[in-house]
Image (cartoon, rainbow, N blue to C red; front, side):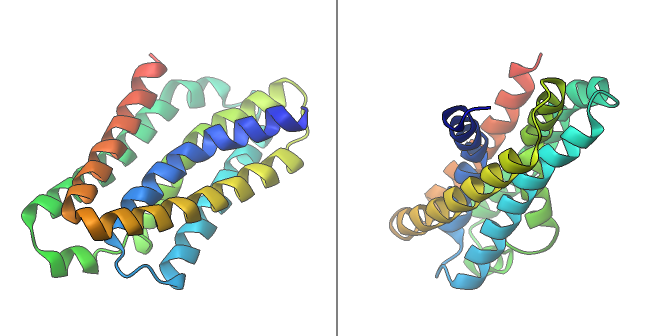
Length: 185
């Protein structure tokens, strides 16, 4: 795989992480180093590990992954997005701040949801006989960088637009989940 194709693939895979980071950045006020590091690290880690897992699984689970990955991503993204919308519309600022998307099960769900397509990429890499280590590293690093950019941008936008950005971010997550599901039907 040439470098230009690899970078384009990594950027395409990082778009989900970027969109989620925009939404997360809008509710993490003030955005400090810790949550920024946690999200960027975990999004990058999951984006880098999923191709490796897919590559190792190879043709063994290809049928299952291609059949169910879009539904898994839909459920995870719709659940997290719906929760964001609900909390924003409920209007309890203090409770929203206590539900930090960079902690616990929310962070794990977001990490899995944004990287599930990387699992399919790993399976594809195995089928076309590409060794996965360098692509996985590039995919992980680019996802990490795009997450930081998304968090910083979301933080700036969120400070100006308030809860509207959180609602928009939730809608974007639901839309991404639906898009993944519809595109694979």
